[in-house]
Length: 284
Image: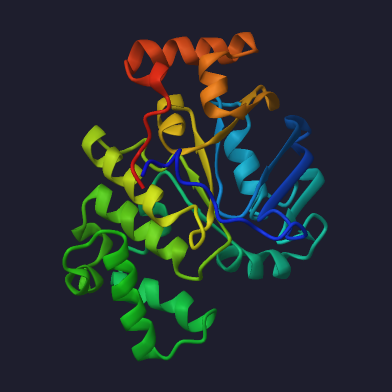
């Protein structure tokens, strides 16, 4: 079954989206960098946010976890599990991160302590947030590493980050993001720094661990339209901080309505011969 064919389980009509963003505007250092962005992630959905460098997509992603600088001015509405988060104290945002919304960054090295074994880095959130004992956390850490594709999870758990390849470190980062079973997983350019073969494996992994009845909803932030087309059913296109197009990814690829979106599609067709057939998805 392909990612396109796989549909989220039916949800009660009164259940709120896992993430609801409405008319979000962000000013940094007195400059408008995001202007009126909005989208929704139903439980179990996969949504792409695409745009060139400087389009505001990564800033938007950071705002969804309360990770912008203190001088940032954010207006609009960000609701997680139906709860409005804008205006909340930093301590409330801290509780949200990991438990409800987790993030995988482009550079996994930045999120891993090179002097601490992988097992300990995975176990700490399980113990402090999940209430697991030390033994339970070690067992769960090994299970997470197995889930993200390590053939020998116990060996990986004993490793330090510098002993792993770039692709392996990104798999560890995904395992850490999944540790507290979030409702939403935000992946910001998760494959950009990896070679093509490793990219394919990470995309396959994201297809396996997100969406559907049991996995978190996925917000995939990327400049790479073919990557989004492989994995997501909906896409939001940003340009200069504003939404210029939104809709089912196959419709946006087939018939872009904005000139900038058309440029992205044409460029991607030049680079990726498979893009016009965007219905071909990563298997899940």
